[in-house]
Amino acid sequence: MDVTSLARTRAERPEAIAEAAARRPRRPLLGGGGRLMIIAADHPARGSLGVGSDPLAMANRGDLLERLCLALSRPGVDGVLASADVLDDLLLLGALDGKVVMGSMNRGGLAGAAFELDDRFTGYRPEDLERLGFDAGKLLLRVDYADPGSLTTLHSAARAVDAMAERGLPVFVEPFLTSRGPDGGGAPRNDLSAAAVTRSIAIASGLAGTSAYTWLKVPVTENPDDMARVMETSTLPAVLLGGDVGDDQDAAYEKWRGALQLPTVQGLVVGRALLYPPDGDVAGAVDTAVGLL
Image (cartoon, rainbow, N blue to C red):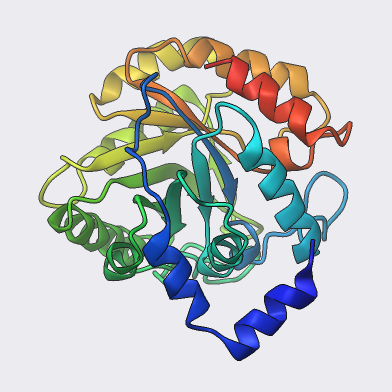
């Protein structure tokens, strides 16, 4: 990856990013197969750089871009979800032509911060996504009933959904019920029980003045057998999120395989599990995930 050339272009011709966006060939959100395979790379903007036991695995931007370009080149991969800095690099590299481009919208809840659940919209605005000709946005909605910051996030998320709908742009909402433990301390932990995921889907589905352009981005529950009942909570189209699945990649594939058969589930949005697989074979991991669709 020629990071030197990217840096030179950014320094000497910053307008090249907008030019690349303007000439980018676009495609429908859903292709002929009616399924979506999106590679996620919006973690660094939240200060979340770790994969497995390596706390800085995603810190090398050149390495990350190489992995992304490889993943995007594989058959069946529809597009990418990322923050502006990553998507700007990919635009300059020509890696987004004919791909679904999904901008990450709220990155204010930095990993490990006291204000992590007051998740302000510090990333893409709806008007940015429209101006750049991107195809969708994504927002994270973590709700802790004991944290007042969650109300700020809920309000901001609802207005973002409204603004995206006004522009006819799909927005993928990733909901969780979250807590910091019984004493209110410690890092936020997402509750993946069937009851919690069900409630989070109900909350996300009812955001804003319309749900016409809202998609859900949901985790597989602790017990994958609960997913059929959980996904009955809403008629909104949904994709499954991957997360950091650790060393047991095969177990993750099996969890995704079953949930992908449900009526409202349209595809996968997976990042670290495919970009940094335990065996280092990015192409192989991506191809296996595409095969599940």
